[in-house]
Length: 520
Ligand code: FAD
Ligand code: DLZ
Ligand code: SF4
Image 1 (cartoon, protein in one colour):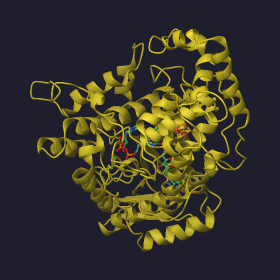
Image 2 (tube, protein in one colour):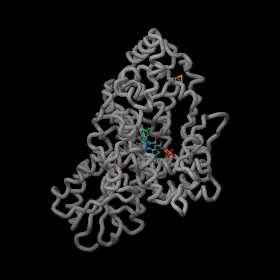
Image 3 (cartoon, helix red, strand yellow):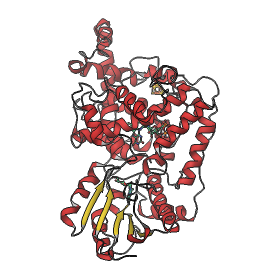
Image 4 (cartoon, helix red, strand yellow):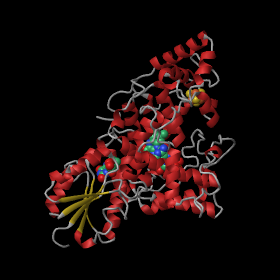
């Protein structure tokens, strides 16, 4: 090792061999620093499997780097003198290695980036902060795109990303198949026996087992089942999971993207978000593979386009939106939602079958698929007026793929309309009808989805009208939703009163969550 190396800290969601801060570095003058720190593991009480996933993936990544000849200084959570924070650990590493500079790839989260931006003042050596080029749209490009637009419509952004990457584009710059978006073909309800193939799970090896024991001992009071644990924790495993998706699941991914079946936790979804978000899989590569599956005749265009839109459309848009609106996004509460999150979000103990199944999957797998997060759990929080902070904490804590940059815009903008409609053009509000159409939940629910009011009525029905009624001032002028008020106004007064009293009775019976589930 030459005198005074470059110190390269790599964070838990930067587990990529081609990371910006590693590009161009040579093995003989670089010390890579990886840190398990208490602050990150406990600022919110992450699902146990999420901590296992990150620590195990970090330890495997460190081992791979060492095998490839890199010097890795790895700080374990239980190491003596671990200061508990990124800044504290970089300070200690500077003392150990006396580097001439620290090079870090920018953090994905605002909270962590704020801390990193203080490093140049804190440390005596140079600090270089590099843009994270694993995302396709740099911050400045998103800001330029957003500049002067009245509404940040995802579809417009998505088309830009299609043009920029050339993904699913013809030689003469047209969308393949003639349309940009095949969402209309992607709303099949779950009819008959769909039999999605079981998702690939990986047996924990010695490294993962050690981490499972650590998490069992140190994070016993965190939400969620620790085992069975089967998430991919290496690039090789993540690639196998991607292979399985592209051979077994992608064909039906599109049509059944919005479908929900009791006990079928993944349907035809890719289950790749945990691997993409921590850096094991490259999002652009996945889109290229999806396009290849279409070109090879192995998957229909509606499935392939749907998958690509989620990644180069929604994922990139969500990230751009986050950085454009932080830090304000965190405290936005334009609908003035003040109710506490109900206790059953943590225990799963509710007679509402749709919610209890989504919460069960969340507890068992640290995962629920998109439409469960949006139209069951999210819809309930929106209609019931749960305060954004509680909802943000819940989603951040319970999902293995959750990081502030992706959870927050989805929660605050997409499900709660807490940003007043910057992200979504209208609230994703729905009565029990939608859930009944897109799932098999209602058949065996103790509530009746066809009943509109009263103790046996599906709670989503009165909650829907309660929500519409209490936000009339804000929503009536929205051209995508305004028409709904003519239906409301056509009902007789007694019926409207019935809806409102049923909803209020239900809401007053909700037990607020006890302290300590999400944060100490
Ligand atoms: P697939 O359905 O197979 O989709 C493919 C990929 O597209 C995903 O892996 C993901 O990378 C991307 N994607 C799809 N939708 C979105 C979206 N809305 N935002 C960003 N990326 C998207 N996703 C996270 O990765 N982390 C989160 O913390 C997160 N929180 C969410 C909170 C709410 C309230 C909602 C409604 C959605 C949230 N999502 C989040 C988006 C989405 O639910 C998950 O990405 C998806 O369920 C992951 O499963 P999958 O890999 O099987 O996805
Ligand atoms: C999610 C997480 C957890 C639980 N623990 C760590 C950790 O101890 N060390 C680490 O480097 N990363 C961890 N992460 C992921 C980070 O929260 C994530 O990389 C940053 O917050 C991104 O801004
Ligand atoms: Fe959910 Fe209502 Fe259907 Fe029950 S009846 S499963 S509460 S939508």
